[in-house]
Amino acid sequence: MKIAIHDGNGWNKRWIQYVKDNNIPYILVDCYSNDIISILKNNYVTHLMWHFSHNLPTDIFMARNILFSAQQSGIKVYPDINSSWHFDDKVSQKYLLECIEAPLVPSHVFYDENKALEWAKIVDYPKVAKLRRGAGSYNVKLLKNNKEANKYIKEMFRIGIKPSPGYLADVKTKMKVAGSISGVVKRLKKAPKFFKMVYQSKKGFPKEKGYVYFQDFIPDNTCDYRIIVVNSKVYGMKRMVREGDFRASGAGLFDYSEIDENIINIARNMANKLNMLSVAFDFVIDNNNEPLIVEISYGFGTEGSSKVKLYWNEHNEKTLGTIDAPYEVITGFLTNDFL
Image (tube, rainbow, N blue to C red; front, side, top):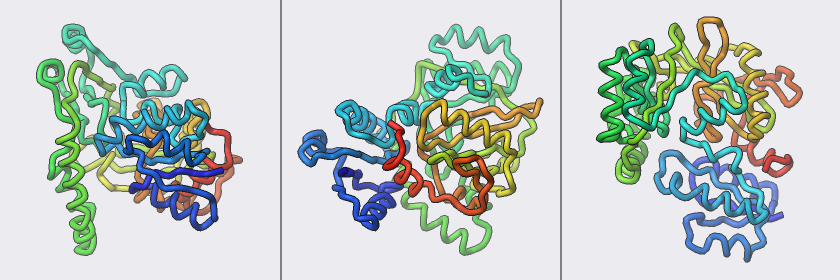
């Protein structure tokens, strides 16, 4: 066994420390390198790991090309095809979740302006409009009537919309969540990194256009549910809706009370159907008290979820303790049959 790990940020740093601590043969690689395939072959690499980011245009442009090519050559990769072909693409997730008969929020996609406009005349409002890419609720709008829907549809088919957030996106919510002076200082320290991400995003991502994607609005939700399945363990938390808004993602408002086991079981079953080593599900609850999936992602932030103190283990038994997601990924990746 020899593991290649992309020399980058995020979970990559944790994996590098793990192989060092456990004396596992490894090499650091630059997956952006022109001769990356030769490097993998010449070093007899058996496993390749790269936690690529939805925020980096280059990652979205080429990471899957490298990973899937390496997988085709017999190298075990994370994330693999099952986990990441639909990453940061809500439209692809719609088709995938419908195919496995997942309980998905009713979703609608159109690639023709006239068909979209005709549909918009006859549906009930409000509707939630989303770009296929982007996280943290930056590209989510609540359309309250046909007039607003028509404007949005025409913009998407004629001009397009930039998927990158603004430099001051959600600044009021973030400062409110920060609470204390120390919390505000902590947020401010993160600002340069966020501004850099926004700059790269604005520079690298083209406008989204030529389609529209809508989901039905599920009313009366004071939160959504972020449920994570990683290495056969399941845990989650509530993400509270922002004041005066309908969105929860990206607000940083967490509730760690125990999650209904019905949602836990649905997430586990769907992860098994998808054959994913790691996946985060976002759920809302409909008027019949049924959990519905909003979207999924192989990679996810751990700042909030690392504080969850209860999880369901691989035998579906409640267990006290916290989950270290990057650790669970690499241990599962090296020992399980996920490909």
